[in-house]
Image (tube, rainbow, N blue to C red; front, side, top):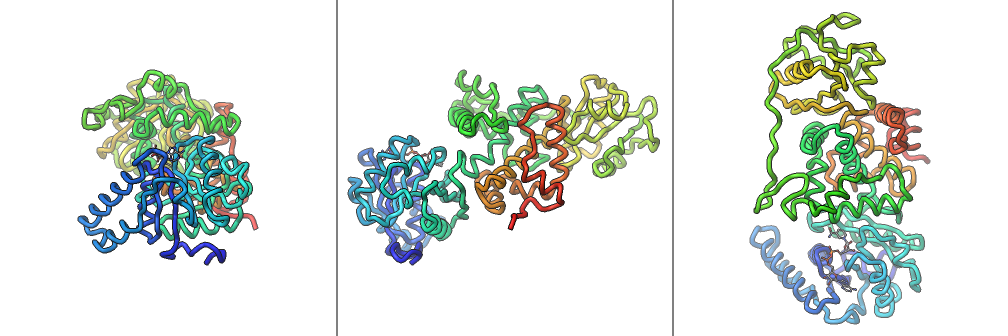
Length: 513
Ligand code: NAD
């Protein structure tokens, strides 16, 4: 017993009520019952709980066919699910999880009704994604037993659950829910009751910065996706992701989080997605979003431009940032193009600069180079599959072709983008890291939990704080400082968490004692 009253999470006596037998309620019921709990499913729509039970039995049957579940265990799990006709049948539950419509009034009314049905010690949990747990609990007789228990879709596959304490939630309630989530096979992370909790808060940077890059005309939507996929390792580019989620869902969430944080510039959405939403260009579900989709939902492939075979007569590489220059030296050498060793470029050389939060123009002006022959190159991220060349507004197209040819001699793809402070990848990744630093600074979650939640909930290649450590807190700091200086946009102001740790040479996981 964790608190002397409720059965332990692994006890066969634990009775869990689930209200809302839709997508999420069904998924939660599945993991609960397979972990050994007795589950009572309820729904306001007549017959919905029974249908959900039948769907769960069918799922168990498929798991048995695939050899993932023993026949006897499937049968026993089926026996443990009860479809309720009325809410009153939840009397006797040790815990009730609601997964009903995302509406504060409806959730408050449900919890108020449940308070009259379940025992005084039963926990009331909400799977809300966007409402305040504190607000849901407000007005109840015992708000200390209310917690957020936020799963992701599909519940059995997304192995993360955020446990959210409202302002009045008792530590014991949180402790129990963390133990329960863990027993059900998920990584349970604790978060404060703030808009977006951890995952939906930390994920604000990716889409909004992607849209901003498009609105600045830095590149096309498909090149943006290719760069972030190939160089930074995101599974889906921001446009592919928005198409998949649907703008009818994503755009309102972007606006809601932005407003809930009182117009915090870091979360500012862009007009592009609002316009697409108005036009009904919602994404995959309607066959048309950023991409076009066929009747089977297959995305149209947009190939890269044919590679350039034009090579420059010689290359001059800026040594203003020696560590960054070092990262592309090997690529230039293996191209066979003569690399100039002089302090200054010769009259016809292609000039290459290494941008870090600044743009090609700023590097060119600072170093007194000929803008017609200058391009910047991304050096910080994976250079194996794709290289990113950034032109100044004055770069001669012939020199641009030479740069494309230079970096394609080993068969890698080359994307050319227009001038942008921080290119594409630096901007997007630095913003994600900075938001995670703010989450840590505000004590919304512990640094390790932030990383676990983002990796499991969003599928990013690294946890954002680990990513910051890998790039170097001082490098991320430089990118953001230069972005802030060049754009004047407070969106890029470095988080105090980052600033202090970069200044002291500490890890971004470092916790104050
Ligand atoms: P859904 O529409 O699939 O299911 C909701 C179910 O709740 C329906 O069966 C409906 O009949 C029932 N319902 C509605 N009002 C009710 C009430 N007052 N009493 C009892 N039953 C009621 O919705 P969903 O996608 O499963 O989402 C449920 C909750 O989970 C929402 O709060 C949502 O924000 C949250 N959530 C959803 C996702 C997701 O990706 N779908 C992810 C995380 C959290």
